[in-house]
Image (tube, rainbow, N blue to C red; front, side, top):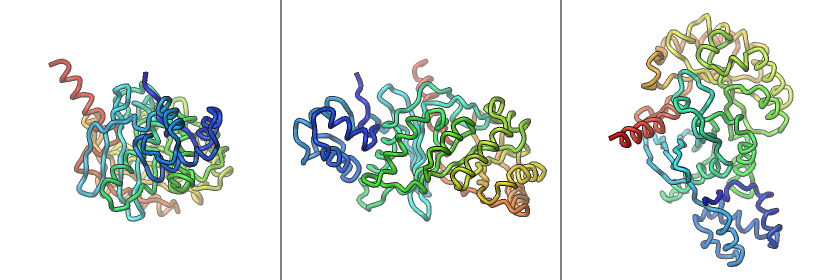
Length: 358
């Protein structure tokens, strides 16, 4: 029987668990320090925690539940990890280097049921949610890799944009956010964390009511229902009008900026006419809106899509700017490795299936 990751407990949950087992509250702080400040990989290394407590933790929890199956490193410093879970499933995590720090993109589900027609993540449907501990452990594994280099680099930013729909795993997502944001541990600032959703309307309202300082990004990719439904099947049940009403509620409740993620697909959603439709859609929200224009990373299985030409991207950008919309063009990273989200995982699973048939 596998043991759950201890990283799945918030500080309050760890404290309550230890007290319930007959230990003093201060033990929680000691354990927390060993996990997140000293970043040990075994309970036996927690020297100032008594043997009884260490044995109890060892009996009920694991520190390492993820195994590095493979790792790719790009010339630009991007690192993509393929982790193997205790049940044999594979997930991806990516470390990206920016001028403002080191950012990790984490996965929240094994596979994805959203089914965006351009995305490698959706090639394999969701088999289960990740636990909060498995999500936190992705950050810890990346930090351990950085620690091994002995150059004092630390993860400073997090984007929840990997495989899966974060709002479809809402409770575990919330626990993850509380753990990584806790100032007694990793202390990654809420404003340095971004959660991306494809648009689960009910959960946008719920997320707004959490009153977190965490950033929200919406994967929009089209400004009208006909086009968005064609490339994102979620739009059938979560159409644009009620989706924008949920965005309005988020903006009014939090007074925080929202980012609209927009992948540009050649000849599909990158024309000046579509750009104007997008500007019209969000013009009443432009004070607290930012559009992130993303060049498409081609995926072998989605041959119907190509990356927009540079001139088309710049025209799209210019149209938004002329309408007073704050926007930018995302700089491509990891272009010499399996850069598209879910691509490394799907390739490995394909290889494993071919081996099993041989």
